[in-house]
Length: 460
Ligand code: MN
Ligand code: MN
Image (cartoon, rainbow, N blue to C red; front, top):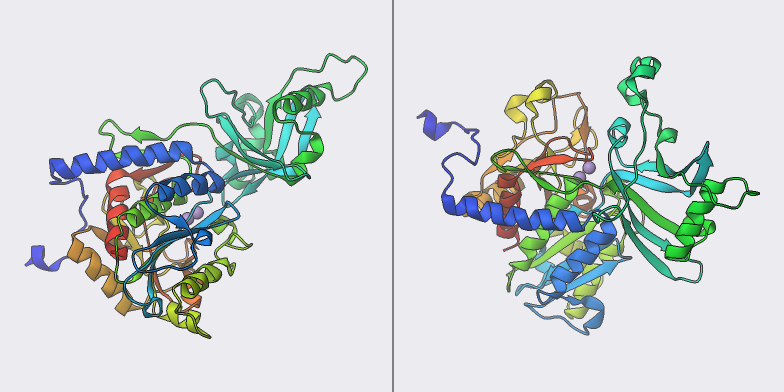
């Protein structure tokens, strides 16, 4: 009876077939390759565009009309992307949506970042998203992004990834002199204004100048990229960990890498989209930017660019009429594909073990998010949870339903509420992660593969 009635919590690795294990490890290798090529939202868009182009997707701007079976995408300012596979049913019957975000916590350069102090040159940063500042000191860092000159010329930068490249770092105080620092609260141990990237120490040979180290750096940058100091004001340069994504553990069961929140869901969503051929309902994949800072701005999920994309589908399918967009949304269903906090045995006290997500137990569903009395929650309706469960059960995909931490301990949110506002049925559905938002996050390869299978089953 117990076997039959209990909702058992078991690791997916138990009794796994050799074939399934092979599939999981092969998929994870491809995922790790992706993580090593993609450390920013712009790089994610570039990589995914290539994947889509190679798999029969066309830029919607190049198409006069669309018909069932067509595969299209729209790129929003190189930082967010929407893709669709047109279904045999009308769009107004609703869409099946997958939505992940491709921005990750990091350090951004300030508009006027470059300065010299006591023989060192530095770049000043302003952190992006919810980070624990102390985690970003004394690790190898890389610089990724773009500098756009006032004439429109765009210079793409990625330095610190190649073995031949230099890396950068943010220093921290030696323990011998850190008595005062060590007495501070952890959150105050490193000041935001002290997250300054060390970038050089050789002075220029011109004896009469001041700030000679800064001058030498600017000379090098001018030689290599043709830029001057003023060009930083129109740049987006992101400081990200320089270390590579790796298999973790003697058994290689996990992935350790920067930026898995939320590129693990982004990658698995896109892989799921590549499997979709002639669906009944149109399948749509959203890769959004700015989730980590509230989804604002014209590349964030709050922007109306997404509505414009769906309107374009309606127009080009020859279906559109006044107010049809709202109806499309009200008939649509979505998995908000974002990571979940996995239970960490070392910090188990913040989790409630009956309602925590476990690494290696399959894809995680969060019926609701929010914090303190479900405030700010996007809460999926029971009917919809049942429908999603049904899809996973039918496809044999292990899933777990959890919430983020113990009551009143904290909480979080995703893009789900923004889509729910439009009338879409939406539930959070993603991969549990350890050390979320740290420079090195941990996932289980089993869950990564489950995410791909779950998203695939949903859009099919
Ligand atoms: Mn996320
Ligand atoms: Mn996050």
